[in-house]
Amino acid sequence: MSTINHIESHFQSSNQIPQSNPSTLTFLENIDRLLNLTNSTYSGIQYTGIRGLNDFSCTSFKMLVVVFSKFRSMKSIFKLVNSPDEKVRSETLSLLWNFSAEESLKVKMFEERVLNYIGSLFNYQDENLLLRTSAIIQNLCEFRFEKGAINQNQIKMVTQYKELLPTIIQRSNHQDVRIKFLSCNTLCNLSMNEENRKLFQQMNIFQDVIGEFNQNYLNDIELPSSFNWVTLQPLLGLISSKDKEVQIFILYCVLSFSLSEKYNRRLWRVLANNHGIESLLKLKKSKIPLVSELSIKICTILKIEKQKIETLKHDSNECLENEISKLFNNENMFPDLIIKCNDKPNFYLHRSICVSRCPKLKIILDSLSNENNDNIGQQQQQQQQSNDNFKKSSTGIEKEFLNSSEIGKMIISNINYGDKQIIELQLELYEIFFEISKWIYGIHSNISSESTTKSIMKIAYYLELSDIVQECEYSLWHHIDLNNCSEILNLSLQCKAKQLENVTVEFILRNLDSLYLGNAKSDFLNHCFNQDLNIDKLWYSGGTNNWTPLIKNHIINSYQLQQQQFKVEIHELNNQNNHHNQNHQNSYHFNNNNNNNNNNNNSNNNNNNNNNNNIQHHSSYNDYDSYR
Picture 1 (cartoon, rainbow, N blue to C red):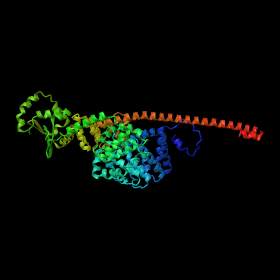
Picture 2 (spheres, rainbow, N blue to C red):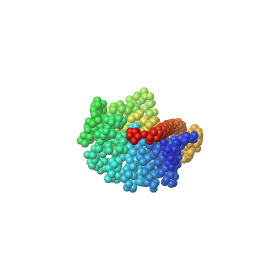
Picture 3 (cartoon, rainbow, N blue to C red):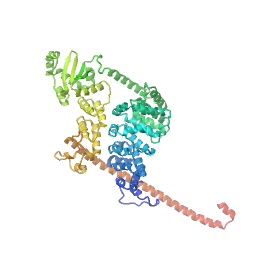
Picture 4 (cartoon, rainbow, N blue to C red):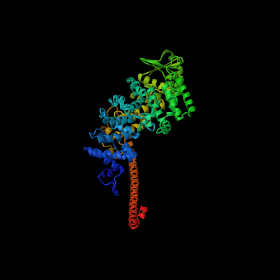
């Protein structure tokens, strides 16, 4: 049992029976005492603290993860990364390696700036240290978490830490193949984000780094499965990559795992969680020979041939989307809706396709057809009387919708020219509608720019295009920081984007010490939100933050609910620990009683033996030899 009492009893006899203490510390109190030791200025005391936490990770790891994911900061642990004492530094990196593999700790570790401390070790050449820091970085940048959620760290790791990417590239040339593998794996994970991918293409990372690794190690098929610390989950999310070098890297790893008894039984389950089976079947048909060859080998070994019907259905849907996408912005395919903007090329659409995919567009197009415009052409003036007749039967919802969504303010003019409708837009709406139109035609482009995503999300919400709203939610997850969190939360509430709202609230609550300059515990828990309460000056107002009464009310209510939930969870955590300790103590006493009984039996046997020896002493030598 790893408790502080255990840590402090290193100099006591290991045979001493633990005494029951009516004031036994709770699990959380034990963790707090160990954290206090890590804050010491003496390396010996720091070592005791970090060693105690490592002991807990061996016996109560899940409980330890819960504590640091919800109730306690890891900053005091991070500081020990820079300890001059090699023992302290080694224990700390071991613990952080384990922590960084946990889904619930990855984002928090990044937000608490663990890379600031690890970055100070970038110039060290010790291979053991390089291996551990490379593994921690790789864990923090995983594309998908175990339950399928997208990692929020990916863009920020590249943009906020300018030295990180050059360091990873440098380590990809290291002599230790383990460090090479981790570095390439890190780059593959980071490349799954579209913004990072564009940067990697500019830097030629796919060919020069990942491609070179594939070329050098592709024939060493046992390499990936020989690493005891490689987990399947982070790798299999990469199968859906768009880049052939990443596809080859992951297929090479999966093939190695499929041939290993250690991994192959778990491959099916993990592939299913990541839509990996579907991706593998698609890659079998790849036009890149090596990708197709590796995929076929994996499917043959794992006997993945049972989803032909589903695959055919998926392929037919994909073919239909590809055919429809050819109609987008194609002037030769009989478009009847033309979108124009000053100094921008026109793009061409089909009213029937747009309206079928987005019914709200019919309201806009009908409204524009029936409005009187001062700048309309001569032919539209001739149609004015028929338009006036239509207006009399209109419900007025078209104009109300355009005004409430602010779309109407960005429409400059509309001209009906024969069977074609020509609409001129302001630049902002033109660019937004161009991206939305691509989605309407089945072209799923990745939305990455923060400002563009915010604008698209607003318009998509008004147009009731929930798929695009969800895509924008996913994109904005990667951009939440201290400078924009209140703005993004306000946007999520406006657009009823529940996923983005939850992620943003969680971010704010995790970073409340940096965002609220007062005492949140006393200010938020002792009263309901009151707009008259003068706390505006206490909110961090950097960047685009705007802490409106609605946002502050939402945060305070969320904080109160969180603290209530934390009380329940802490109580359950301590009860679970008490139950664990009781079982341990019962087991200890049981074993100790058995030892005592065995000792008594041995003592009796010894007495009997002595008596027998005394008897035999008077016997003949032949009888004595027989006894022996």
